[in-house]
Length: 311
Image (cartoon, rainbow, N blue to C red):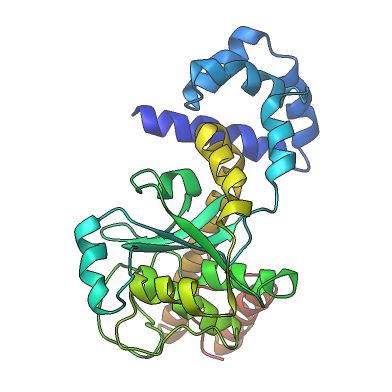
């Protein structure tokens, strides 16, 4: 129940702040709330006691250490960055059969800024902030970046990451990109395939493992170790996890809403066909209604693996 309240509080605050029609008045009213009200709002959002003053300053658009720090670390993590970590030593050791210097047990892809896309058992593919991803990781994690990845393909990487959200977690042999499941290394590989990154060095094997990314980090000339430059951004997120979670919630929830709307339109298309088949609407009406939905989707930025449309 507490987690539900926290999520609702954070979502409502930042959804209204981002609204064009209601946002301005809401922000003004919010900034005029007394300290006690903002403090309660911060607590409901999970903000630690020692950061409530920062939270109040953020809401009021006053100078604060979080906003200053955010300006300093913005862009240090880039979409497509690969985070290599060890959270299961036995699994990492077992992978030395694939690469003698293997040290990682998990691979995570940066979706944008502090937000990663991650494939884990039970949860499948989802967005998590980087502090959550590294919560159980041992020291010595690394961040690597392909030299050809930059502003020119940022949008493509972000769309590819979004496409695979909510895929179930499963490890099965497949040289082709899995269309209905994902696991950590396979997810990273197919995002790079989708974007068309050449000379990635990511092996075309039936099972792709973190060990293969360790080898890329150690030996492949097109991959750079950017751990030192990315570290300030990661440490910033680790220092302010709840505040970072709040500012990233709109992005994460927005993608969930996009998925939900695609699912809703899928049901609408099926209902149109059912009504037409039952003779309750004409073929012309069904065609027109379907065309309207298709037109909406042609203007959408994102598509998803489980709601593909026939061309």
